[in-house]
Length: 342
Image 1 (cartoon, rainbow, N blue to C red):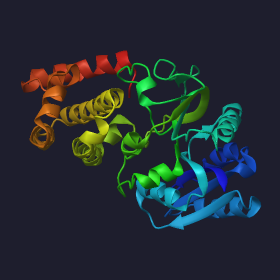
Image 2 (image 1 turned 90 degrees about the vertical axis):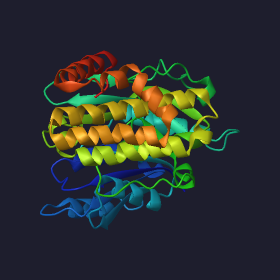
Image 3 (image 1 turned 180 degrees about the vertical axis):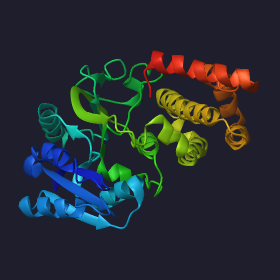
């Protein structure tokens, strides 16, 4: 069995995927690299994947599927993974060699121990186009370093500091045990990937190494604000599913106070982002969608609604009138800058 499976969802990725794959080959025989061609069209993504499979048998596997979107590609990766642990690396991102090797050494040392590792966390770096100074997202204030720990042993979770897909390596079987299945043809499902498995996570380990390099700067990237506004219905679909999950799994989440606090804060940020994007879209339809979102939360769980609504962000997102909406956007920008979230 492989130590680590790495899934690379690819769609028309021929111009940058080699850099990604090459950075992962350093892991050698302990790693399997699943290059998932998600129905690429008019480029050579599949041929490049098959080339790597031929040149690195036993390490690289090329998987072709009809287009299902990022979530569908991640689902395919989980279904096909043979490694004890599982990682997603997007095709325009890459990893740092030294940190990668340390992570593999750490995973090896923990396999077969008295406690089963469920989730390993490491730092990620914003490789923002045109910027020399790189922003590093670390978790020193949130987690103990270089030791196994549980939610109860975690430190304070500051707002705006979240575990993203870039940060985590999950135990593969855990992802299957929690029946994680991401929506197909939907952007922003990475929020579900690092949200729904959390109540199943018992033992964690944090390495303070700058592992994942997150490229950001292309105008067509899904995180670009204009793109997000254009895809607001997909953002909302993820937001609604997170609300449902929080409510329907309340008993499991509430077993640990720090886990509950962390998941609430994450939901608060996602709901705030949805609200602000709908305000910035500024149409009658978008403002109705915002009202519908908050009405849904109220109907689903009044206590959750009250907590979200009366919090600093929720209160700031629901100011009345045109002037109130303008203040909401400015308040969001200040909060965004202060807390450092995107």
